[in-house]
Image (cartoon, rainbow, N blue to C red):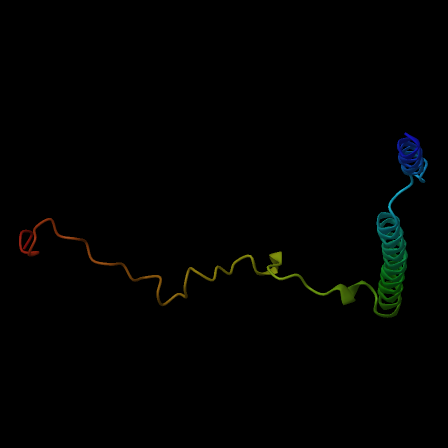
Length: 116
């Protein structure tokens, strides 16, 4: 009878200890969460740094373009391909020597001898 009471007391103490444990996260899960937060903050700082670099490049391009415009005027932009200056030129139409050629008419007869 005495041993049973001791056993029950120990069992109760063990259950109480289980329930009174810190119900916080598992240490592995906590470490995983911290690692994720660290990676996220690292990613955010890298993206911010890259964004600043991109903005600096855009500003540099804009300033260079303004300098070229001041130095050379608007002519530095170049000429677009297919501009409207050569309106009379059609590259697929051929030259004057090939425009007179016409293929012969097809004959209705299989040997070509009906119409002669």
